[in-house]
Image (cartoon, rainbow, N blue to C red; front, top):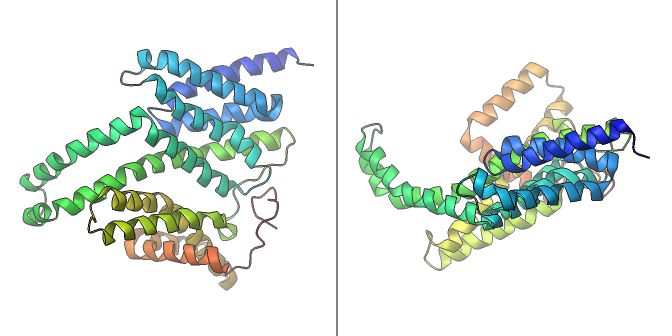
Length: 318
C-alpha cells in the first residue's frame, strides 16, 4: 500500500520527468541524466510499467506543448524524447539487472541517437549546418586565421565530407555524455532500494559487448561501397563514416580497458598510469591505435574475460 511519502515522491519524480522531457531536445546532457534519475527511481520503487507510463506521458506532453515552449520543435520530435526517456529510465533500469553498465550506456546512446536523426528536428539541424558549412570554411580561409588558406580551399570537399560525418557523431557524443551520467544514477537508485544493479567497473575490467563489432563492420562496408562506386563524398560513404565516428569512442574505451589491465598486471603506479592515459588522449594516432586494439580485443578477448553471463554488482562479468 502506498504511503504518503510514496505519493509525495511519485509527484516530485513525475515533475522531474516532465522537466527532463522538455530539456532533452535542447540540452540532452542535462535532460537525460535528470530523466534517468527520476525514471530510475520510479522503475525500482513503483515498477517498470509505471516508469514507462511516466516516460510516454511526458513525451505526449512534449508533442502537444513542445512546439509552443520550444520554437522549431514539431509534434513528431517527441519520438526522440520518448526513446531517450525510455532508454535512460526503465530501459536502463531493466538492463542494469543483467548487463554491465558500460554496455547499457553504449546501446542506450545508439537508440537515442538513431531516434534523434530520424525526427524532423534532427534532420533540419543537420541540413542547416551542412548548408552553412561551405560559407564557414570560405570565411575561415579568407579571415587570415589559418596559415595556409589555399590548402583549406583545395580541400574544401574533404572538409565538408568530414563535417557531414561529424554532425551525427556530435549528436551521439552529447547523447552519450547524458547516458554516461544517467546510468550511474539509475544504478544507485536500484542499489539504494535493494535491487541488484550493475555499476561502472574499474577501467581494467571494462569489457563491452561483442555485438559492437556489427555496427563497426557495417560502417566499414558502407565506406568501401561508397569508395568502390567512386563517390567518396557521396551519401553511402558519409553514412559509413558517420557510423564509424559514432562507434569509435566505444572501441577506444575497450582499448583503454586493455591498456589499464596491462598496467595493473605490470604493477604500474597511479601517477604513471595517469600520465600514460593523458599521453594516450593527447595523441590522435595513439587514440586510433587504441580503437583498433579495442576492436581486436572484442574478437580475441586478450584478458580472457568470461562473457555472456550475468553481470555482478560492479558491472564486471563473471
